[in-house]
Image (cartoon, rainbow, N blue to C red):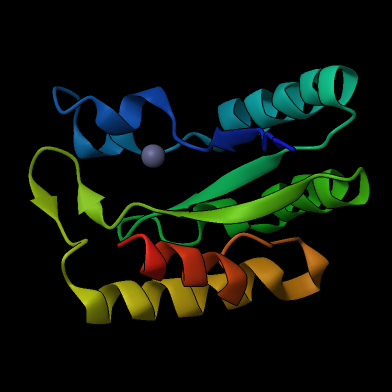
Length: 138
Ligand SMILES: [Zn+2]
């Protein structure tokens, strides 16, 4: 049996554009709320909402996607059979990457996972059973 898990990586275009100023690269709440709602509506029709949206987190705007307006969307997604995961961007694209810093990654993953799980907003990706095969396969 082969299973597919459909996932959506919660990045936004400007994040990767280093030609823009820092301010221009920040996520825009209204734009992203609209895009994510459209994402949910489309996936609801096609996959009956059975997908995982990875909530983006990064040092500059750590909890931007965990504000109330976004949490409402995550709850809706979970209620409709979808789920959320955590998408850690411990980086400053093309400048600095912190993925080798296990202590920082642990701090981020542990702290953010609790926040995503709060209010039953989902989060089923980083479970022990996942880590088992990640460890086994290096
Ligand atoms: Zn990403």
